[in-house]
Length: 279
Ligand SMILES: Nc1ncnc2c1ncn2[C@@H]1O[C@H](COP(=O)(O)OP(=O)(O)O)[C@@H](O)[C@H]1O
Ligand SMILES: [Mg+2]
Image 1 (cartoon, helix red, strand yellow):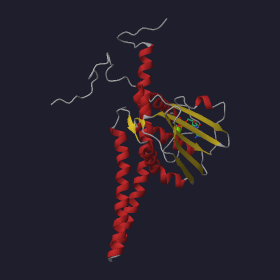
Image 2 (cartoon, protein in one colour):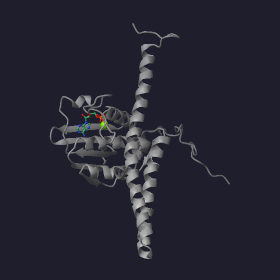
Image 3 (cartoon, helix red, strand yellow):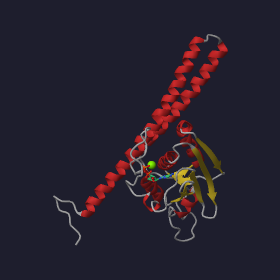
Image 4 (cartoon, protein in one colour):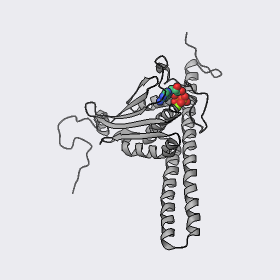
C-alpha cells in the first residue's frame, strides 16, 4: 500500500520529490563549481599576459613597442571580460527560457574557455561546422552539456589525443546534430547503460583541476537534452574512443510544434491576434 503523508512524516512520493530537488541542486552546483575551476584558471592565464605586457611597456619607452604592448593588453582584457561574462551569465541566469540560439557561436565560445586546458593535455581539437539554422534552446544549459562532454572527453585521453566536434543540420528531421568524439579509452559495453545514471562514475574523485568524479555530469546532460525534446546518444569502442551525439530542435521546428497564438475559428478577416493597423 502506498504510504500517505501526514504533518510529521512526508509520504514516499514527497520524499522522492525532495530528493529530486536536492539532486538537481547538486547537479547545478557541480556544474558551476567545474566552470568556476576552468574559468579561474583561464582568467589567471590572461592576467599573466596583461602583467607581462604591462612590464614590457614600462621597460620600452619607444612608441611602437608601447603600442604593441597596449594592443596585447587590450586583447587580453577583452578575453578576460568574455570569460567572466560566461560565468556570471551562467550563475545569474537560472531561467530555463528556450529561444532561437546560434549554436555555432555557443560552441566556439565554449571551446575558447577550454582552449588552454586542451593544449595543456595535448589534445588537438578538430572542428567541422556546417552552416546550420538557429536551434531552439536555453544557451546556458546547452553550454553546460557541452562543457561536461568536453571535460569527460579530455579525461578519457590522459596522455593526449584528438577531439572532434561536428555541427550539422539533419534536414530530414529538422534537428541540429552536435557530435563530440574523442579517441580516448572508450566505455565497456556492459557499462554503457549505466553512464547516464546519477552518481555513476568510474573516476576516483575530482582530478587535479577539480573536475569530474561526481557522476552527475551525464545525468544532468540527459535531463537538459530531454527538457529540450532532443536526444542524446552514445557510441563507444574500448581503446578506440567515444562519440556523443546531441540532437536539438531547430527554431523553425520548435515554432511549428508550438500551438498558434489563437486557433482560427472561422476564416474571418483579422481572426487572429495579429496586430492590426487602424487609422
Ligand atoms: N568520453 C568518455 N570516454 C570514456 N568514458 C566516459 C566518457 N564520458 C563519460 N564516460 C564514463 O561515464 C562516467 C559518468 O560520466 P559523468 O556522469 O560525467 O560523471 P564523472 O565525469 O563525474 O565520472 C564516467 O565516470 C566515465 O566512466
Ligand atoms: Mg563528467
